[in-house]
Length: 217
Image: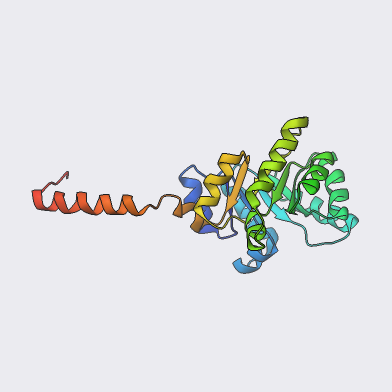
């Protein structure tokens, strides 16, 4: 499973990319606003850091306007994935933009039917929102599994990009059910390395090493 980092914070992207565990980046208007920077400027900087897809989202609601914004975003760098919402107008925009050779990430997916439509119009990525479904006591992982089954049944090449990831457990669960990609905030990716037994064992080792006077250098 590929890891995308869901942020517009440059320092976090640089750190995680240097470790070799980041395969791409996703952004949205909320993350751009949080960064306090111009969308074109910060997106270009992110594209210069990572080799993989960088999702940049349109803010228009009508298909023609989405297409115009998408074309402008695509000019930023070759690794831009234009992000459009899963609305009827978003699907229209996806069809045009993918037809022009662009990567398109169709976002805000909450049903298998929506994912099926996105695949039919040629989406590069479909982004089902796991955490927001869980907030409503619905099973986000069940949606991922349903989309996986449908795509595999018919050989759709659209990649399942699990989004709205809230925990380290979400990451491993996405891998189990067959998501192609999971995008998560930097803190969630870092938390994947944490375990109370690791901390406990390391503490014991350090105490024993100190008692024994063990030194390496």
